[in-house]
Length: 251
Image (cartoon, rainbow, N blue to C red; front, side, top):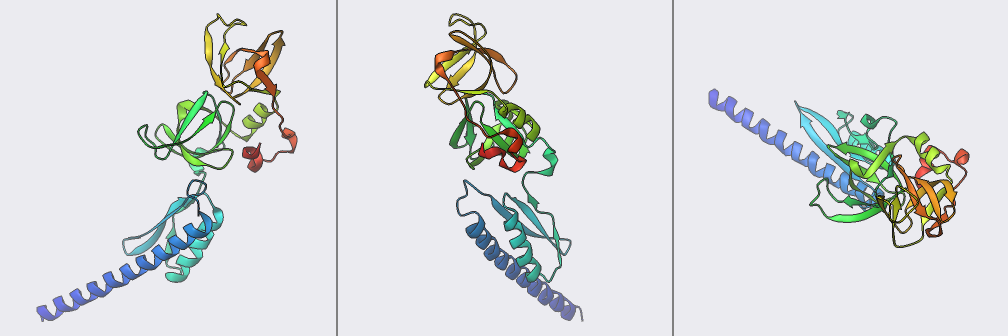
């Protein structure tokens, strides 16, 4: 009797594990389809879902930057499991970030890395005044999206975090960009003064007042200084009143 019961349990477990593996294999196909369709370039979009079984119940986890990708995966998994699933996945930005899901680069060159660590591959850089979208946080690192769509990780010391209203205030200008490869902003209108920071080609600052050969400027993080006027040129931006929150990165 005991041997029969043991055999029955063993067979039940075998088929249970077999069914579980078949479901996971089919889910991997769904995941790959979603990545191919909605994130063919991983540097521009994230589609990363996982299917797990917890206490006998299936749970969908993971995240994406594309709403349509989540909708697609949910439909496919719902059909696969006949609706017996809990959705714990997320569309970025992470709701935990609240309204402050934007940032202004506040250093001359901000490194963007593939992973949230300093030794990770450097995949891009962003410069002073550029607008970023914040997607999620991991310690002192943020997963960000640049104004031209690239995704990567950046340290929180590289930017000034803000909300859509803060970005619009910054973009109301008047904004100026540097037209020389490398320059400096000084505490006083003199090249002999103490530098506030470096600047590189196309770094963007806000003009406060022109004083002859020098222009008093404001940095995204509130610092002020003086830059050589002939090294600056106006930045053309859209009328902030006409810009919606979802269009901020296009400016």
